[in-house]
Length: 315
Length: 254
Image (cartoon, rainbow over all chains, first blue to last red; front, side, top):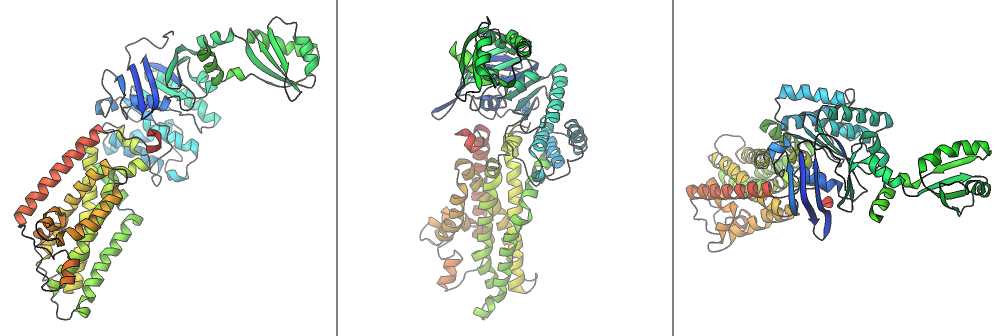
């Protein structure tokens, strides 16, 4: 397993960390160092992402192993919390508060004076694009607005380490773009940012540096492109919908990339396994035009997280 | 930081829907003390005051404490907002004790309001009630003692409100009436020792309702000492426990 996450002095260090919830294992023997920059924590639901976040934020203790944040045990440690900004996955607030009041209250808990808390709240609320809606009660907020308020409170005290648990959930495309850009700026400032997600496409837009969790185990760490290229060496599944699947099969069969093919049960689609999928994709467009084949739909189930896991677990 | 925690907790406790039922109950104290004379025309104002205060105002204190104190942490856990509090640079013991002080402030204020309204009903005014100062002291001591005990219970058990409410209504109403030294196991007996209410005479029914059917040989000084020890021990245990224990939303921990 290659270790391509930044090798600067690790702000976050996990050593043989396991966490059990009764008979259920949440995290299984995880060891990794995470330094400055943006690292994505990638895994399906139940993979252990939130458990890892809770261990780093000192809400829970590891059953075995050590968690260190800037060299300190994070559990109930105020010194660590001065350096951490945390955006939890939960969607719960003091619903009768306004977004501004909620963020300002947490700024006061960060030790800011009332005046500074007010000023910093304004800055953070503006940063997440909520300046015009911050005085409304949270109970009337949309999912995206609630997400923005959570982000604002995580950045209040200008922390070195920012942990964001599924932060893009509920954000609209513009909000996502703005948020990803903001993370890029913060990462460029040298902050250590960890973002959890279960959507591969989302993570690819943010960073190349990933930690891949699967059923509590750290399956891979490193550059997402390296993992992708490893996957691309193996046959990819592609599904092509067309009015003439038999003719298409006849024409595609001689291509060297094509490993296997079969007809879909519906009868209007062809399922292929191809090697070197990027070359195949490049060729397919011209091929269909030259042969006057109309492609109604095109998808690759391998471009999702499940296939990444399938590949890594299978090997 | 401390004022923000205190202010936020107080605002939560003083929300209209939470405080209104208690103010209504305090109003019932006033009504009961006012109409008592109709049922017992020979009663004196201080006797009426002592009976209604013991029977109702001190029960309101215990029950309010059970409800407000058990909410200090469990409410945050249930609404899952605990995560915002526990990931800020505030020592956990400080967070807990400040919220405890906020809860005690509200509960003591409710007890005092109930006592003052009882006095207004019994004496038809605020003057002439020599028992009120003792009762106010007892209300403050009671809010602190019940609060400390219930806080610890709420940290230990998931359904602490049921346990605390049973203690406030069942244990505290019955144990002071038990024969022998059993009464010493009730906080109410120590509060009565601080309040120094006059005897209810031969009326057994009223004595049972006011928790004064048993002997109470506790002096005011020893009552204060005992309650101070109880408060210090319970708060120390609570602070220690809260610093060591994991608080994550319940379904996430399963």
